[in-house]
Length: 149
Image (cartoon, one colour):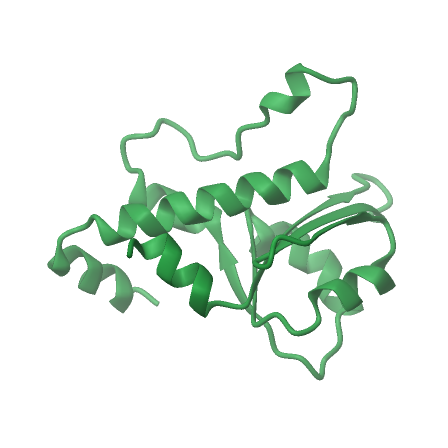
């Protein structure tokens, strides 16, 4: 069993992305993919809260310094989620890549400016690529990376 298969069977995780207005800081669109394969795409923060309820982890690309700043005030204080940011993991696990932005090939194929559901799916794929890269590391490097937390 590889790292991804094991992790998918053990973790309660939702991958998210949001589109926030640059000037007004309003939440315009939300996208999410749960570990069970269900997807969410809407601007409704109420429906988003319902969708992520029951998940232990919220994962995304640059969610610590972007998405969660705007979403946290709308998420229940009763639930304490753990956050995983693929942007922080990428340079550690893929040090030879020249940059670590989430690739947005779909922007080349459509007139749609941003699609948070597509970006949530890309964050999911990147996360599992990072998990597999972690499992391929030497035991010593894994131990060092685990101590960074």
